[in-house]
Length: 498
Image (cartoon, helix red, strand yellow):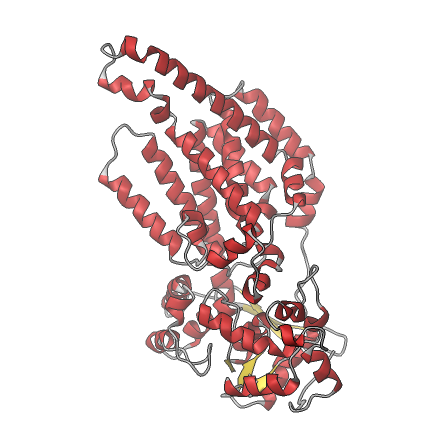
């Protein structure tokens, strides 16, 4: 909700300039500070999509259909609208369109690697049958990776094409540079793929040692930042993508090694007989450099995904790409293996695939959160400042427009420190200490979620336990939130629900 809220603000602003001004001089997101959210949160996609929406809307070409939904269970009816005239439909459709462009580029990439149209089809089919392990765009479209990853595929396509050329033109280098910039602009984690590592030292350190603190544990306790579970490898094996890609790498790799050995043995005898144009074909490291590049890239992505499961979106598509080599002339007869792979994929887990992708119906409902948002809108002033868990704060900003003190963009050091102060209500400090800390942050309302006191994704991962890593004095004490449930003082309880 955080990223979408800025797009929403831009398209609903009186003028485009006012919307942009609110974005670059934002006083709502990290109250009382003023920040440039365009730069801080990589909101360039929201600016582009929002600007296009405003421009097209000015021509009156958009339509939308609205209807009333009676929800029952003593819930008030709500109005629901759909169509390109609805800002969120245009936003999500733009993301899905970009995802479609990515798939077209992925087909071309598989074609370039395998040298065969069938290879392109194999790669796309493999991606489709491992869709849940390749992307999260179908569930959470606004994620930065949805805007960034397509340009990584385009970058690898240009690099692959460049490596297959005898001479490299300036235009190729320009395309590589442009696609790299477009890949890095929308997403703060693009640095993982490019191995530039800024701001991730402590996180990587915690993976290779016993080092841990509140911030690294808040990351690694979340499943997406934990080590990739064995279940993921089992899934990839069941759809055959892991064994097929492995077989292709072994087969093609051995052929390259054999060609390299033969070339080295014959190098002296043929040194004066080869034409310049033949040197490229005779050197396996040059003629097969595009394949070597993708094998090395896959190994790097595998290491990254093993350490941080969220990064499997790099690893799984790379497996799909390498699987396209089954249709190359370097593999065993292509049509037989292609048919075998297709038959196995179609017969394996087809019902599961249908249930996961085609038969998903229903609607999102969170009545307690809805009640909270309605109470905030009706009972608090527009300039009231709120604090709470990061996800809830994003919802508060999107739904109510109230000032918030912290939010989910945890990569910024200042925001991490601020969030840690807010989370003192889940520590083991005294309620008065937490109260004084929040008052210093100029907070008017704090939203406490009691389940955060007891919620324990795995051993040592409840928020009170995270504070135990550093707050030795209060170890073993009752958590602050449990104390507040018994007696809210010095806070004043103004709203609660189930």
